[in-house]
Image 1 (cartoon, rainbow, N blue to C red):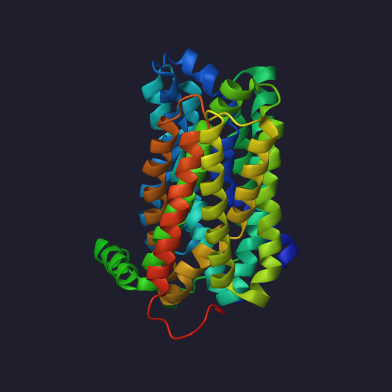
Image 2: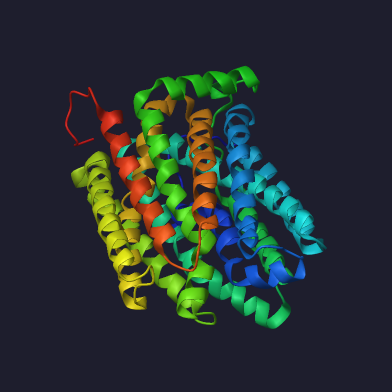
Length: 406
C-alpha cells in the first residue's frame, strides 16, 4: 500500500474531499428537519417534542462510535477504518428506509450515527497526520467552511425530495452521496499512517488514551468546552423547525432561513482560517466566547421583556451574530484539544470527538425538550453554556506561562 505522511493532494482537492466525508453527519441531520413532522405522524410518535429524538439518536451513535473508530484507525490504518464506517452507515440507511415504526427508525438512526463516526473522526486524525498547530487549525477552518455549505442546502434538499418522492427517499439520497464520497476517497487519498506507526487495537489502548487525554488540562478543558458549545448547536437543530413553524408560521420557507444561519457559520469559519495564522487559536476562541456570552445574555433579557417571542428579524439578527461566533470556535476548539495529542492522533481524536459529542447530545436534547412555543429556552441555553464555556477556558488556561498567541 502506498503510504504518505506528507500532504499529497492539493488543498483545492483535499479540503472539499474532507468536507464531503465529514458532511455525512450534517447531511444526516439537516436534510431530515423538514421531514420531522411527517415522520412523526407516519411512525406514530406521541408527544410532538419526541420527534426531536430522530435527531438526538444520531448523535448518540456518533458519540459512542468515535471512541472505537479512532483507535481502530491507529491499528489498521485510516482508510480501512473509514471504509468500515461507510458500511455501517449504509446498513443504517436501509433500516430507516424500511422502518415501520418509530423504534425501528431510531435503531436505523443510531446505526447511521455509528457509521458516520468513521469518516467524521478518522478524517480529523488524517488531517493531524499531515498538519499541526496553526496550520491544522487553518485546514480545519477551511474544511468547516466548505462543510457548512451542506447544512445550508440540506433542508432544501430534504424538502424537495419530500415533495417529489416522500421522506423515505431522503435516505436513498444519503446512500448515493455516501457511495460518491467513498469512491472519491478510495481512489484519490493515499493512506497516511505507515505500518510501523500503527498500534495494536485493545481496550487497554483506548483506556490509556482516555487517561492521557483527561490528565492533560489543555485537552480535557477544550474537549469540555467543545461539548458545551456543540450542545447549543444540538439544541438549535432539535428545535429549529418547531421554532420557525410555531412562532413565525414559517414552513415552506424554513430551508431558506436555516440556510442563512448556516452560511453565517461557514463565512465565519473561512474568516477564521485566515485570522488564526495572525492572531492564534486561543485569542480568537476567547473573543468568540466572550462575545457569545454577552450577546446571548442581553438577548435573553430582551426576550423576557417581549414575552419570549421577539420579532422575526430581531431573532434572525441574534442567531446570525451567535453563529458568527460559532465559526470562530468549532475548528479552533478541536485543534486546541488535539494539539498535545499528536503522538496519539487516532485515539486522541476519538476521545475528544466522543466526549464532546456525548456531552453535547444530552445538553442539546434537554434544551430542545424545553421548547414551549417561545425562544427563551434556546436563547437561555446559549447564554448558560457560553458562560460555562468561558469559565472552563479560564480554568483550562490557568497556570500557563505564555500568552494567548498560540
